[in-house]
Image (tube, rainbow, N blue to C red):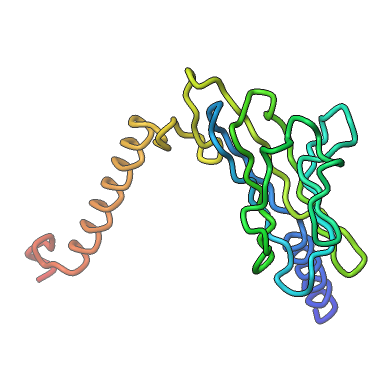
Length: 189
């Protein structure tokens, strides 16, 4: 019995460690022309020595944003991001290494990765899947699966609300019946 508890705790701690160490993954949908904040939070402790924002599907080895030795290296930046990508907080206070991408275009659609380096090592912190749609289309938040205003939908919402009302009424009736003599027969009184 004691051995099975130990195995359970080891498995639980291992699972928790893997979950907490995994990178953040976000999905964003915007319209062309919008400014986008690609959010990433590095360690708040220590000095961030390296920051790489890349887009793996670029045909070159260039970056969206490349920071090292306390400065931006524009010569490592892909030409399509020149003058469009900047740090949200140039001092990177509290580990904020988010990048603002100005004037989005359809070509910005794709996967973005944020790598942060400190203490001689670099690690993937955040992965963002960005979808940029034509301004004539409708943008929405792909995280919640809703329409452009974030609404889930009237029919499913009403169905859930109706089900909750039925459950609440049933619970009230059970409690009322249990605590009330109105439903008792004359023989039970």
